[in-house]
Amino acid sequence: MKFPRNAKPFRGQLDAAPFAGVFFCLVLFLLLGGLLYTPGVRIQLPESTGLPGTDRPTVAVALDARGQLYFENQITSRDALKARLEAVVKRSPDPLTLLVEADRAANYDALMGLTLLARSAGIQEALLATLPRPFDARRGAPPPR
Image 1: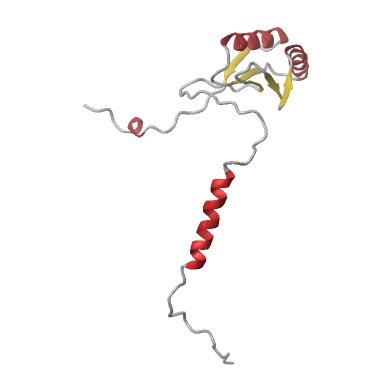
Image 2: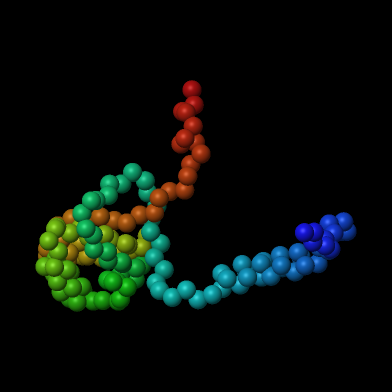
């Protein structure tokens, strides 16, 4: 059985206006996307490489530049944090490690106070969270002679 073929290959020129419209919309979305409100607290972690990790279960606590503490995505006071950490330690069968997500501008006294508070709650080890450094092209290359 033969079907009639009405399809003819397109041999004309493409119109650039639809492509320009889609490109304009894409640029507009990208520019306005940066202005949207992002909920939460901005914490800028320092960059580092070669730091050790842990294979133990971790408990994360964030510390912003003003010294405010955050546990489980909620603002908390030092006393409430200590009570919550003690409860987490009691529930965990394995020893826990405190993962401190501290802002670059966080005060050293606040960092020490947080680690001492965790130690009094029963968490003996504390590690600082960092971001990996951007890839360095010279690192993969052999050293110059």
